[in-house]
Length: 309
Image 1 (cartoon, one colour):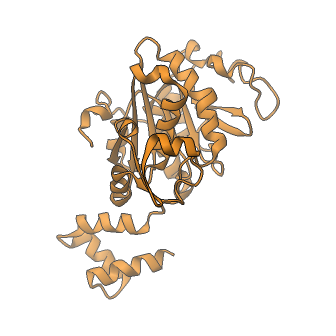
Image 2: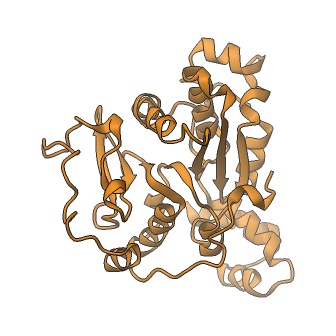
């Protein structure tokens, strides 16, 4: 697959061999533009609205109600869709927010949608979708939140204003460290494309980006086993999500909506966290599991201040 896709770029850049193309990417004056084309060419953007509905139901019934309780004082919610492709996932989350929780109409709710592919992001900004992407959307939602017909539907302004698209490479540590105070991170079916060491680094950045007890959703085929022990798993209706365990005893307590849920071993997840009597500093705890963590000069900057579209 990779060879087939790269062959298209060899033709476009008049390179005879893959080695020639490699050197083009390293030394040619047009390498930055070509690197963007390469990303667009080799990334896989398979997605749809309401994909993996059990996880969307978990967001609706467990995650978002907890976030609303936690954010009652500030009435501000921040959600991150990492690896958003052409926008189906973040717009799905926006539909759930608007449809299921009308009280949030007076809140400041923003969804950050990031992806490596500029072409996918541009498609998300356009917000035009066909039958395949919309096949799981209930007819009532299609009528309420989209305009158009004949198989081409455009996302409405109510949802569009909630979602902010921005290019981001998950291995770009500087950009990743600039994102902070997230309530929820969705990163589904993305980590499978990275090796183990890179996963550890990316997961650590997600951990840093979340507030204490912030919640993390990954794909059904993905797991944090052997990658990061700082997230606690919470099973719900045949799916699992994770929440961030902070450094304080209060932060280690289980969010109220999760009390009574049982783990895969049948034990209540609201029991004390392992080793809760021996608290480590955040840095030493991360270092013991995923390697050293350094201070970020951008830690005080939020993604909102970057001026992304």
